Each structure stands twice: as structure tokens, then as C-alpha cells.
Length: 205
Image (cartoon, rainbow, N blue to C red; front, side):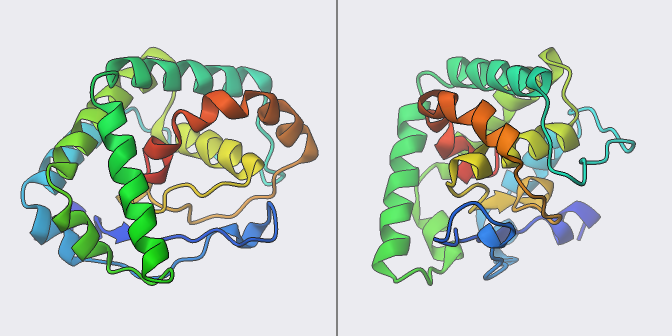
């Protein structure tokens, strides 16, 4: 099995209800079967992911800070992704809402493999979104590492779950960072716009 396929898995993260804390992300259950069940999805996703610039030198600030320029670039990248997904984003949002409802119905203990494989054409939707993401990150000078960091901090500042069903590097963050009050103050006025992209962030994009 190629190295990427061995590492490409779906992870679940559940939001802790006590506000914006380091404990917000809770790894529940890896689902290695996703790669097999979705078939060629993992291979194409990996190919697209390799088109995104890597920055081995990027190190998330230990204080969890995000500067205004980074946040502005993130907003611009999200606008580009939403524009590129304009015709399919409502469908992805509908799938997101349905999966959330099913997770709630199961009391927060879902079988992610069943949810993903039962959702017709979800892989196609995620690949469409990934293509748009690759273009947007390139256009706005983001490495994958920087983008994921800013994404995570922005949604943590809003107190909403991110990367609940994410793939590989784009899943729930491995490192945990505080969210400074300055970041919360910067992000909160943009809550309505950011939530337009929450379905993408929920799927790790």
C-alpha cells in the first residue's frame, strides 16, 4: 500500500462544550477502511494535495497568534473556494448537515465509514472542493501548513468544530494552540462569512 494511503484516514473530532479551549478537539475513532471503501478517492486526493506548496520551515506560533495579513489572506482564499464551488457548495452543505444529524442521532458515536460510504457522490464533492482549494492556496501564497493553522485558529475563535471528518494532513490538528483574545476579537466580526465555509472546514478543507 503506498505510504500516503497508509496514512490517509478519516478522523473524528468532537467539540468540547466549555468554550474555546485546547481540549476542543478530541480524537475518537480512526477509520482506515475509508481508503478502500472510497476507492480511487485517496489516490486523486493525494495527487491534488501534492500540488499545494509545502513549507517545512513554517512553525505555528506557540502563542496561537494570527496576524491581520494572514487572516485577510485566509478570507480571500475562502471566497475563491466558495466562488469556485458555487454550484456544488449547497449540495456539500446539505451532506454536512445530514451527517451532523446522523451523528447526533447516534449520540455522538458514529461509524464514519458507514456515513461516508452511504453518502452518494460525497467523494466527488470533496475532490471538487479540493481542486478549488489548491488553486486558492496558490493564488494567495499559502502553504498547506500555514493555511491549516490559520483555518484552525479562526474556527476555534468562533467555538465551532473543524476537521471533524478530515483526511490525512487536513484532519484534526496534531498540535494544540491557545487562541489569544486578540485573534478572537479579529475573527468574531467575520463570523457570518466564515460560517459560509464551515462545511468545507468540517470536512478538513
